[in-house]
Amino acid sequence: MKLKTFVSICCLLVTLGFAAYLDSPYSFINKNYAYSTDQPVMVQPVDVEPDVPVLEEKLINTEKVDGYIIETYEEYEVYKDKDGNVVKSEPTGKIDTLQYWSNQQQP
Image 1: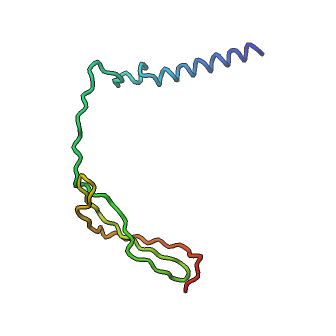
Image 2: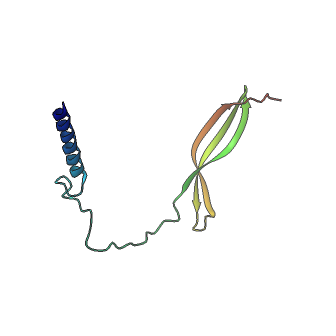
Image 3: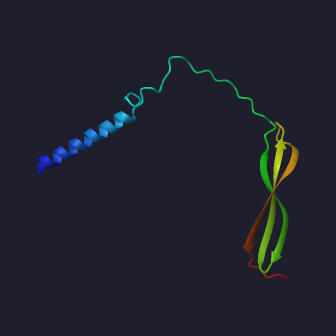
């Protein structure tokens, strides 16, 4: 019984060791990938375009119908400058509606 347990544990350790080797950067599977370099890495700043639009949804209508509140939103492309000020806002034509139950009684 002890020999069987010992052999099982040894097989498990060999399997785990082989799996760890395959996952390491030194295995034959990963030989084509470089994980370290001898030369230092040069970091260069990336220019970010300030004219990239951000999509925002704006509430355009709210109405109550049969105990439900229906909100209508329209999507806009918002252009901002480097300081975060809105330069231009254009509607995309996409309209979403949100309907939810209102617990309050209508007047």
